[in-house]
Length: 165
Image 1 (cartoon, rainbow, N blue to C red):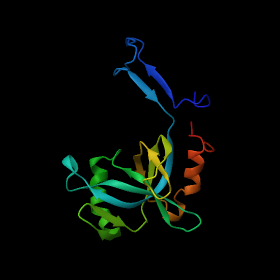
Image 2 (tube, rainbow, N blue to C red):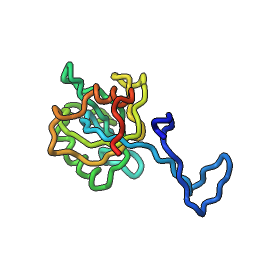
Image 3 (cartoon, rainbow, N blue to C red):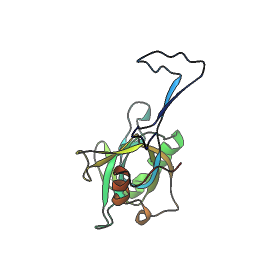
Image 4 (cartoon, rainbow, N blue to C red):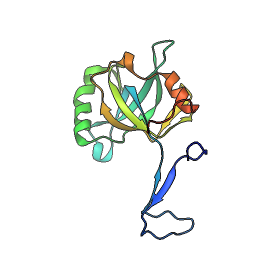
């Protein structure tokens, strides 16, 4: 289906009724999933249930030409309470600047991120952003020099790299 230009497939339970123009809860859209190892550039303080915890990650990919990190977006999805607790305890050790809402970090922490696609975005410096990004796991076995690069992000955006099946 992807080769035909579709973003994924729809599946539904055999016993679920068909209703034109409506998916209902028994229907699921299944899209390809990519993963990348990115660097945490900053983290925002949470709100609501996450008040008091560092929650929303600012994610960056390495620019192989400059060695700098380019922001690709933010995510607060995929985090358990244990991850939120760990972030809140650990991230201040990497702090370089703090505002009321955000703690900026030395770019040293690598996190594995799952996402569905890369889209063009004027909001971020690299002109690209991740869609539906979520935390899979932190990667203490990797340093920032091993993070995925902007070239990889561009290749995914251009369709030169396909999701792993």
